[in-house]
Length: 220
Image (cartoon, rainbow, N blue to C red; front, side):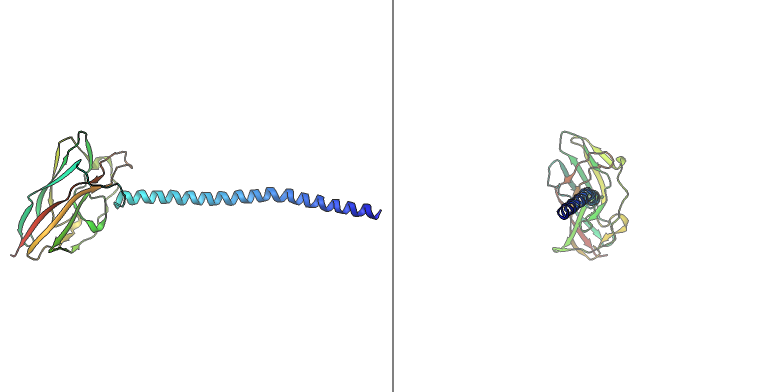
């Protein structure tokens, strides 16, 4: 009788233990699924935010890696030498020429911008030096609204777009300090990563050749 009770007791413990495991297994699976779902959701959210951020940076700050020198779009300047009195504007004509056999869509926001701003909304980059040293620039970067289709223009094969530009100042009244008499080198190029992906425009991306304008500032 005692042996029978002992056996029954052991069997009851086994049953209790088995029922405990039967409850623990699905509960563990449920916990793992919930935690995994949370982690996956957070990862996807962070990944989406990272992608959006990369697109934003690529769109507005020119930090993409697609640029390379190309002969498809050629930049030229007239005149290559300018002589003005201190305080006068430094006016030149810039020409963008399509050397390909197909149409090009280009960013139409054409104002000079210091290279230090790394802002890709305005594609004409400018670097000013005097005797090999960088010339100080005063002014703040201007952030334009999001591009739309009307902000791009079509350049036909062989066609040239001529832009009048004052190299002494940028949009927003920023300017390089070229008040002191002497000779300055103003280096320009057209550089854009804007593909217009947000507005359904497949625009040209890349960097043209550099051009240099020699500016002589005369005393009053």
